[in-house]
Image (tube, rainbow, N blue to C red; front, side, top):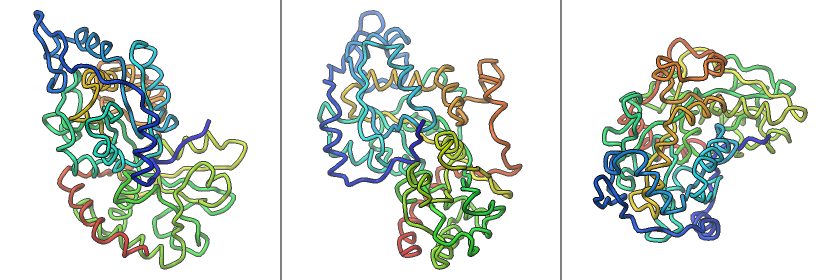
Length: 381
């Protein structure tokens, strides 16, 4: 198995072109039959109640016949299994997968470029900073399992909702470098030209979190990412920061022997590279940094009912356990554990996490995003 490390940044024109070629579904009339024979505008529905329940939503989504998704690498947190499970459950709905390697920011750009077209994305999967900056692009929707989702991990009307997450970890090749036991270790000569992060932190959620981890372990906090920017500036000046977006190929070739990334992705690299390259994963001691990716419905979705059915599926027990199978932490984990619907073996197998963990709230993430936009490029040039 191969594991894609990120939604890789590509030119906006290329994203639009790939979408135009890759998405073939046709949009249906957003009006669907609702409770008591009334018509429902699927594009404005905020919960299952508008459809009279799940069966009504399923009927409306099947009538549309397509779902356009973007930036969903099949080897990212078990997304392939999630997509296939939805397709198996709803064979009447064709899933059009576009630009799996696009960044969170490029998902929004694609929606803008393709607005009003049948090929526009119906749904988004984005990091916190991008979600917070683009709420006017999203339609509010609250899934049936809404109450199970912690308040801190969702916008209260349902514009964006956390879904799966993990801890920022360091993956490394033990044949190339010693195990890093602290952030400061990575400044040493043994790591010269060897340390990579997962993209641009002004665009990609994993890279944003890498700076966040550096901030909280370098005397800063989630209230001020400056200490994280300072660390990577120092890493760059030492010649240790390599500006290559890591992929399984760059790890296998030895170009990126040390990678900051989510724990579930780093664990996946180890499995995917077995027999080619040794790969170990460590969550640095000290304060841990956790984060979730967020789901959202495109306010201009060409298939608004299918978009909402996709959300319902993602927050079902079945899909939440599929995230767990990919090594990620489902957002409903605690509620599912209490209800005995979680896969207990997989839940128990998750890596041990730090005693103290931080997760930035909406205001902190917005402030960090603004700071990165202002300071990052100059710090690592």
